[in-house]
View 1 (tube, rainbow, N blue to C red):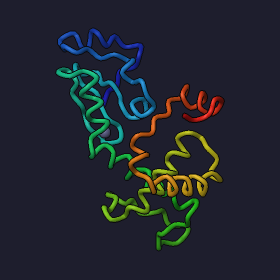
View 2: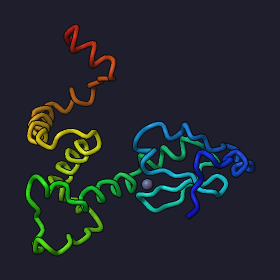
View 3: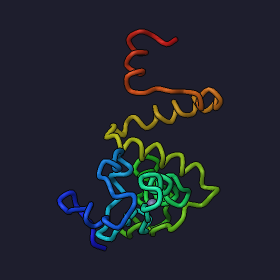
View 4: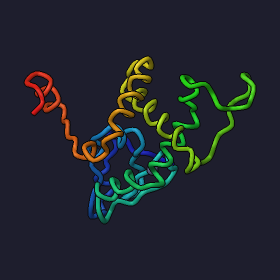
Length: 171
Ligand SMILES: [Zn+2]
């Protein structure tokens, strides 16, 4: 797969495409991490799903839809679980000896929700470069907050609101 870089003339590559590629579509970390522009017109590539994506009809919306699709989200979770981040803190559930490489688990079992939750927290810690010592606190925090799911869905804390509320108090 041949990927384009910012140096390539993507307008020319996409000259036949209605919605031409824009580098500012890669606005957030998740998009930057997983999406690549290929040298084919109207085509991008998701590195975690190993899948080509078409965006000529909907542009950025097409790519966003993929980033929010269940197979993509599952792929991210699977990779996190395969790297066995949770093993670093909670001990590896693997039965293999210390020297043998961990077997790659192709899919996260649907009923394996505890591991999923742990992987989510650890993924969050890794993504934001937080200290791993924070993990037990984060677990406590999420458990505490999970008691009121309705309030959780209504929480809004953008960066500026968060600092405002820290200084001026919650209202
Ligand atoms: Zn994907």
